[in-house]
View 1 (cartoon, rainbow, N blue to C red):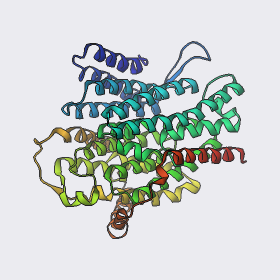
View 2: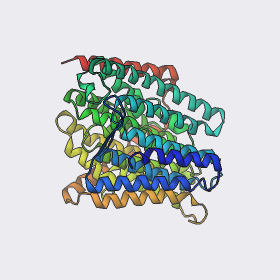
View 3: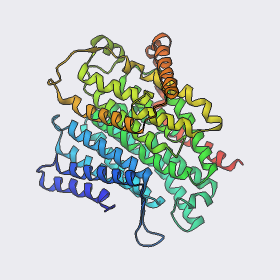
View 4: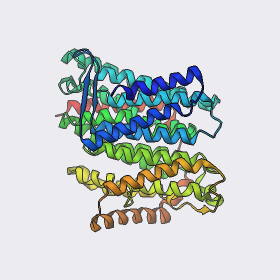
Length: 473
């Protein structure tokens, strides 16, 4: 039954490719199966390990951590399929969406390094096809840039995997701890590239901002997580690996915030926010999956709404105002990421605050205030009345918003002290944006750091830092 999570969507996509009938509905059933199975694992607390062949074969683990990510994948896939059904999409989009869903599920279930490498590469190819489906020069170059940088990261991952096999005779995650330090550094660097974290993740703003809104929702909501779950699993095996990944996570949190302060384009702001938020996931591996779930649902909703707005420029958008059917779910999603009570982002952020300790703990509050600052343009976005019947673009974001609210009510904390702290952080961020940081969006950062050769250079620099880090006592 576990294998259906992978082969079910792939078979549904293949049927749609062959028959081209009912292609917008057949894969949705497989997404719903993923949703039901992940909810069952979360409710029962069961863990389902599965191994094919022998110790050199494929290892699969369907546990609580994987269930959060698979549930996220299912909900975002349903929302994107529903959102795109009236937009004149070519039927290949829905086929690729089904393939992507199965490949991403395979990434979340994989529990050995080589199988993980294979399914991540399959996911990268599918994402490449989705990004380039617009067939314009911008889309094609963005897709080629994405797959090239992804392959650079996965080349490091593959070399590290081979070194792990040489030292331990297998591909298990446990073997990474006993592997040479260089192998650990290469594996971590490759996964940081796929997760869009800190210096290895500087490719992310351009790739996610230039893609179509639905593809951006998939990339920021789901695809970046294929690098995060393996990092969470590695953190659990060694305090040294935990410390190194947490250092990269803290760097990513503040790097994403600093970049987002100067973004005038809404989609670029959301993409830079993704760098910061995925880094939060790595700070506390025990609660990382629920934080990734909260961020993925909210970010997918924000990107789906952003693609239907009359303007992406934040200054012009304040003048034209956002239609209320789109503005309301955007505000709800932004409030969730900022940690507003009653939403799942509030519960996830508080759990991260409780789980971290030591040198990271005093940095959580400034990082949370920074998150509220960069999302203030969305939360305070001027709105205008509009008919809810005018366009169905609001339906999927409202569905995702309902998930944020329902899950927040279920997992949230109802302590007055915690509420006061979160509301104070949110208010501080909104006030700082209004009186200080609002002017920064008029400052344009030099674009050289996003050039292909510079991003590759930053990946190599991060690898050097990681090698030095793992060799230090």
